[in-house]
Length: 339
Image 1 (tube, one colour):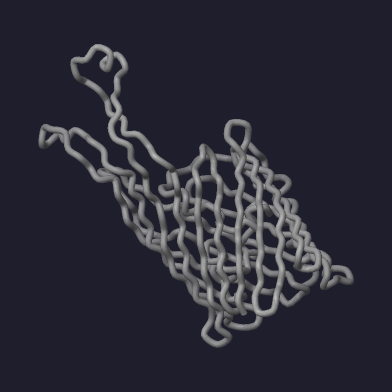
Image 2 (spheres, helix red, strand yellow):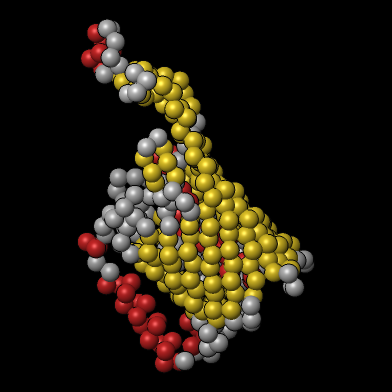
């Protein structure tokens, strides 16, 4: 097992460091991409290496098997300041019972702000005809998902979990010419779907090395008018370990290395690598890199946590580099645990 683990760690590091940037390739289309966004600030700061590391209520979004490590009630609220002033909001609540397993609830919402309708102009006004379009009413696009999850430890080393979501995308209405009716009609651009996630977590029994797998966003096809689309299906495998356990180790310090391999529906494979240094269970310094992305790459962050009698509080912050053409990403999570 020690030799096998050593080989796995070496392969993880080599795979992440030699992934060529030119390997990035668009393979297909996927709708509702907000479903793939990371809702855990801790792992977002670790290069999105989350399959084996998100051990709070937000695990419901990445690998539901990790919900089994929640004890008592856990509430997590996350806000992501995305590019072009878009906000991504997420909330997760989990309750871990010693006999029945862990139950979870999740909510995700995108905030695009107000948008303006724009229509092609084919009338007689010379100025508008030269412009080619005209403005209509303002509207707010709606994208959100509501889900329930469950996780259970099958043994001391093996956990499984699942997550079911009701997903809605409402892009307001649009006008289009109907060839059979011979006139313009109004189309409601609203789609409702169900998605399914499941995941596993296995502790190898050597030090605290763990290996996890997850599949996210299984669903039927959606459709707008005649165009069909798929949700952003992702297959993931990851591993993580406290490197200080290779030596004497200490309860006061931990240095966790995590690596995820991701196989998305619409792009070539990606690799996420991250590390976290924990001091006395109170201060956390994090960093990571996302390989095989066209813009994203460096991530970093900090976390503060404090345990009191019967409850705990935490705050996490993550920064993400989004290249030279967009503003950088800022993510924050506020959490409370009741035991």
